Image 1: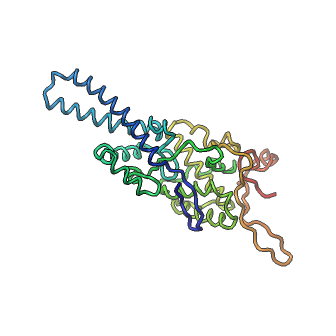
Image 2: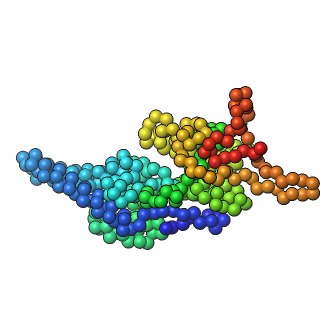
Image 3: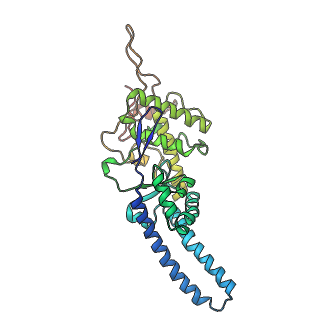
Amino acid sequence: MSELVTGEAVALELRPAKLPSRGLAVLIDLAVAWAVYLGVTVGIVASTSSLDDAAAAAVAVASFVLILVGGPIAVETLSHGRSLGKMACGLRVVRDDGGPIRFRHALVRGAVGVVEILMTFGVVACIASLVSARGRRLGDVFAGTLVVRERVPVGQTAFIPPPPPWLAGRFSELDLSGVPEALWLAIRQYLTRMGQLDPQVGWAMAERLAGDLSERTGAPAPQGVPPAAYLAAVVQERQARDARRAFGGSGSGIGSGGGGAAGSGYAVPPGSASYPASPARPAGPGLAQEPRDVARPPVGQDSAEAASPGPGTGPGTGFVPPA
């Protein structure tokens, strides 16, 4: 298991796949691809027996490229990083930040894989995986991807608390194209571990990440919103956009509003930690400790909302506003 160490020396765990499981998945994929290629080749030879040598060679090269190169690319793109071998071994290809891959990621992995897997019989891929701290081959390095284990114990599954319901959809117009994958990874790993951090350290990390995210998006973070809640809302918005691109429609309920687990797209475990409040000021003479930057609902709520329980108190939001 490798770790990402933040500036506050907090280790965030990752679960990259090991070389043996990756090698077994590649062998299964290659066996299936070669079986399909041989079957198609026999059919092509039988149907193109009347062609001259040049035309037959062109057809053979085209079939090789389409089946052994284009086939894995298409499978990884359509299955969002799960080929037959990876499904059998419980693996998946994801982006560096843990999100689903797209066509460009699969294309780079497949193109580089021709050299480091097919042409060198996997020797280059094995050496690169052994040298890499997270077991990545050259195709993963150039594509910005990582092969991770999906079959992990339920208690160890990473959980990102959903944002307060009044933040749902608030960042739908935010430009996220300039945010690097490394920053997404740091944000997601912070959100999964913020309940285990010291309050002062966690608040400083959240402020730093929120500042970096605001700088990349070109829009300042909203005033009065805790940095952790802001980060969770932006991550939820990105997941909703990824889901809309992958499946179409409204993104399968992710980021569609509503404060509970049904509207957030997250499975909320019992006893999940709330978003950290601002560290209290040191108490002076006659002064009580009060939190700063208290998160409040946006101005302009109707009377029905004002009469209902406060936003964020619904089940599974992981956010408890001040009394």
